[in-house]
Picture 1 (tube, helix red, strand yellow):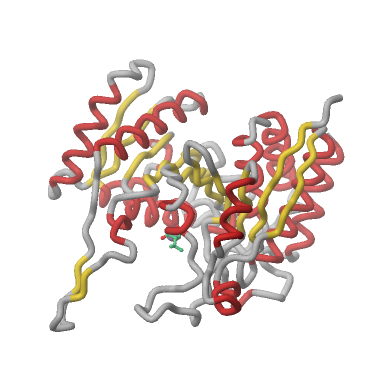
Picture 2: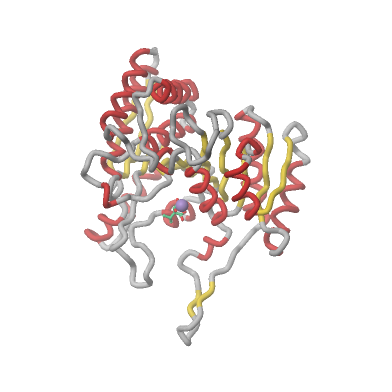
Length: 356
Ligand code: IPM
Ligand code: MN
C-alpha cells in the first residue's frame, strides 16, 4: 500500500481549544492509519495567547507554516478579555485567514444525529440534514476593521459589500455542493432583496448561475423567513447560500436545531488554502474541566479528510460517529456539552472505528 502523506498545520486555540483539538487529532490519526495515510502535524502558535505573548495573533512565520501545509486544523481562538484598542477581540483569526488567504467558502453542515436532544420537538434524523454555504470574504464583514466612527463619536457605520465575482463563485460552489451531496438537489438563496439593493443584486446573480445547473432545484427565501423555516420546516433545506453575516447567524441557529454548536464544524476553503474548525468560540469557562464536547473538532477533521481527497476515510469517520450515537455511547446534554466528558466521546468514536 502506498502511504499518502499530508502536512497539517495545527492551531490548538484558546480556552477549550487545546482539549478538543487534541481529542480530534487522536481520532484523525486512527482514521489515517487505517486508511494508509500519514498526517504530519506542525503546531503553530496563533490566537489570543499568541497575541498576549507576541503582540500579534498570527506571526509572519506562523502564517507561512500554515500556507506551506496541505491543510490547517484550527481550534477556536479568542478570549473575551483579550481585546484590541478598538474594542474588538484580538485573538480572532477570521480576517487574517479568510480574507488574507481568500477562503471564500464557509461550509457548515447541519445534520441531526440519532439520539441527540434537539430543541425541535418531534424531529428525526433525516428531517434536518442541510449545509450552509456562507460567503466568507465580503458582505457586511468586508467592513471588518474598516468601519467608520464619526468624529463626534456619536455614530459608527459599517458597509456591506456584494461583488459580482464574489457572488458568482460562492453561488457556483453551492450548486456544485448540491450535486456532490446528491440529497434533495436544491439550493436555497437566502437574502433580503425585498429591502436592500445589494441583495437584489445577489439574487439576480443567483438566477444567472442557476441556469448552468438545470439538474438542481432553486428556492428563494428572505433571511427573516429563513430563520423561521430553519425551526419550523428544516426538511425544506439541502444547500443554503447566503451573505457572510446572514450565514454566520443562521449557522448558529441551525446548530441549535441539532444539539448546539458543539456538534457543528466548518470548512473555510479557497482556491489554494483551507482551514477546518469548530464553529463555536473558545468557551474559557469550560476549559480544563474535561467536559468540552470534542465532536465539533472531530467533525472538522471529517471535513478536512474530504478536502484532502480522502472521501472514503471521511465517510468511515462519519459512520463511526453515527454508530456511536446509535449505540448511545455518545451522550449529549440538552445544552450540547458532553454528559460523560471529552474522553468518553473520543473512546466511543475510537471504539466504532476499530470495529469497522
Ligand atoms: C464564526 C465566528 C467568527 C465570525 C468570529 C469569531 C469572528 O463567529 O466563525 O462564525 O464572525 O465569522
Ligand atoms: Mn459565528
